[in-house]
Image (cartoon, rainbow, N blue to C red; front, side):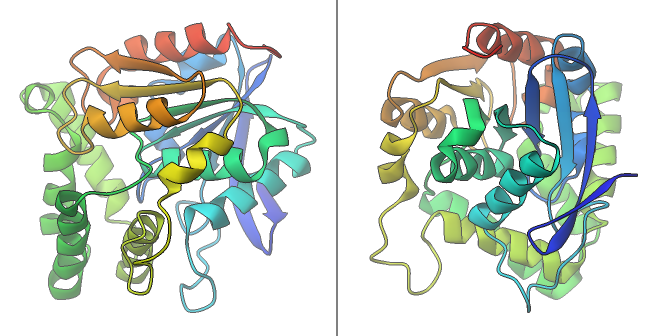
Length: 281
């Protein structure tokens, strides 16, 4: 499998299809299989770029003792990857933590973006989310990357309706298996990257929220959410849309936190409709 040596690490990638490039950034602790149901649909009309972020999947797992994992670090990696692939600019699509990576990439490297799409994204955290991530850290410290953490993750990322179906249960179990492949040290670092992004780590009390920097994003933006996402409620996505000039807000009907998995056809159609309306497509 191809590994790009960029930004002092190695990033796994896969380029599929023809047309305008679309970079797909996955969520917390999950690799490129995050888009396994939606990417084949996008590939029919675009050139998709799948990645395993640094520390995940087939990419190099740099120790948190040597690098600090943040959405900005991943953004640096992906900007360097686009250069490595000789792709001047691309549509940037990110879901959940991948949406934070996408926002960081587009804000820091505006010349790399044709457009931005966030799905189930967040530019800040509330206390309920902080409690969720801190509780995951406590579970890992006591029990490791076992069934308990996997069940906790599945409970929050999938809707009740989806879990009642045989396919939903199988998909959740596949996601759980992928999450459990992370080392406790790295997954804890990824959780800390979210807390850092939300300015909730010790010493960040006076730092402005990333929400205040959304005004720096000038490319066409789609901010989408599942209308049944009780993990990252749609209010977080609306906040992104309200603070990015000209952003389009959309909801995926009956979608949970990962609509590319629960509603892949509807989500792919939404994204493609948006992309096809942008310059450079």
